[in-house]
Image (tube, rainbow, N blue to C red; front, top):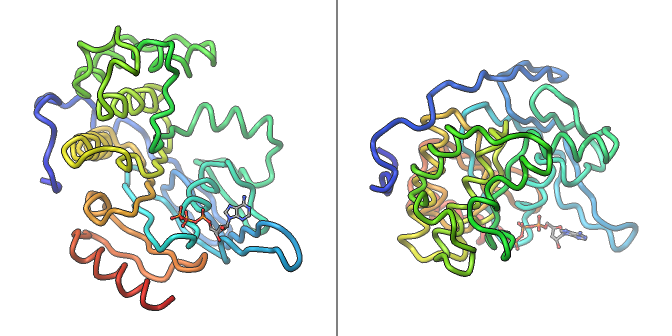
Length: 275
Ligand SMILES: Nc1ncnc2c1ncn2[C@@H]1O[C@H](COP(=O)(O)OP(=O)(O)OP(=O)(O)O)[C@@H](O)[C@H]1O
């Protein structure tokens, strides 16, 4: 069992069928792998001339379908830039980005926006729920904006597993922080995204609420084959991942498979000392 185990409210029923999503084969310039996303020699530079900041410095990385990767590193090391580049929110200065089978670094913004809407889910620190809408309306909003009907069975399974099935008529200000984040997670998963991106999704939660959210995210990966890439500062959160990549000054300096909170904390201490 992964650290923290599963939230009792999620029950034992396998909501998210293992292997339900077929792995995508991403043709890279030199490698072929079953990837949900891939970066090839990606550099991101913000600003120009003496104000230029190299946020990512020639990163190559594949994010295998059905895997959970945590991104860690000191403040300013490029974590959010990396996540947003994979998600197609930032266009690299150099290099190639693939999302599923599509190369996206050279796509026009309009096409990219549609691809993001259809293939990428997001969970943020601040939940980003719309205050006037109920939980159910928030969860189905992206699909309704895309003029797609929510799958009722999938909706029911997700909200039951997230333990919010009796809160669907509540507005965000009538929900706890943990419940709001689980609503946001159902919203992200309802579209069955090829890639789910999390930017500090437990950053605003107490320890127990954070554990529940992480258990649900881990379950989505294990039972449904969801691909998850998550930025965190918290070694306990990173320990839920299959692999942790550590950034320093825009480069990947370490990776760790089967991480523990202790091993992640040790590597972070080493990185901070290297600065
Ligand atoms: N829009 C921008 N314009 C200019 N510089 C930027 C921009 N976004 C990020 N940067 C710079 O790029 C570098 C990487 O930033 P990024 O936000 O990716 O780091 P981070 O590791 O996520 O940091 P934190 O942990 O503090 O959130 C930093 O030096 C930051 O100041």
